Every structure is written in structure tokens, then in C-alpha cells.
Image 1 (cartoon, helix red, strand yellow):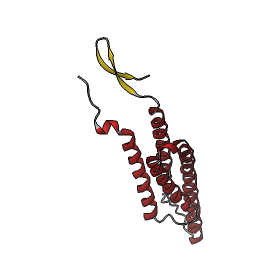
Image 2 (image 1 turned 135 degrees about the vertical axis):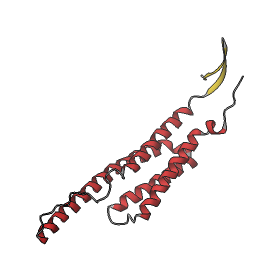
Image 3 (image 1 turned 90 degrees about the vertical axis):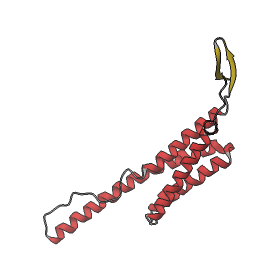
Image 4 (image 1 turned 120 degrees about the vertical axis):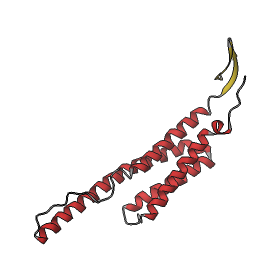
Length: 161
């Protein structure tokens, strides 16, 4: 018996692209909501917005995938920059807190870190890398097709040539 592909199975790549596009949109909204508007924070906000726009572009104009692969690779590097910036901001906050305690004449140290989370900027890198993989796989899957080829002891699907 021949199985017909379900609509979900036949559109799985487009659905994954839509899912990652929505994730870039939610990341952008989150950064706006947490008021990432000061100097270097604008790099994260603009990178998330660019990721969303690149993702929409990949959905609407699939022929531009090669250029978008380069764009998403560059975006993935900005997540590493964000981790470095979050680390430096936390280190600076801890140093200022120690100076404030010394000036106050107390010997207590507060070792708790309340700065920006180090792992948060990697969401941008992860989404960009996921888009790279999806665009690469989608570009390769369009070159090979699957067709029904009768086999010796039953019917099965095999790659077309």
C-alpha cells in the first residue's frame, strides 16, 4: 500500500523555519521588554531584530539562502560578544560593590552575583546556528528528490536519481 505524505511531513522544513522565525521575534520582544536600549545592549537588540528579518526573508524569498547563510553566521558571533559583555558587566558590578563595602567600613563581602545572566546571549547564537542548519539542509534536500521505485519484495521509497 502506498502512503501519501501528510501535510505536516511534506512541509516540515517550512514549519521549522516558521518556528525559528517566531523565536527570533520573541527574543526581540523580550529584549525590548527588558529595555535593552543602552549603548552596547543595542547590539543584542538589533541582532535579534536582524535575525527575525533574515528569517522572514528566508521564508519569503528562498532563492537568497546562500547570502542568508553568511548573515546568520555573522549573527551567531554576536551571541559570543553578548556573553563577553555580560561577563564584564557582572565583573564590574562585583568590583564596585566591593569598593562600596570597603568605603562603608564593613568587612562583609557579598559573593552573590546579581548581574546579567551569562548564558542568555547564547539564545541568539543558538537560533542563528539553527537557521544555518535548516537553510543548509533545505538547500540540499531540494537537489535530491524522492520518488516511488518498485523493489523486488515489496514497494518502498528510495532516493530518485
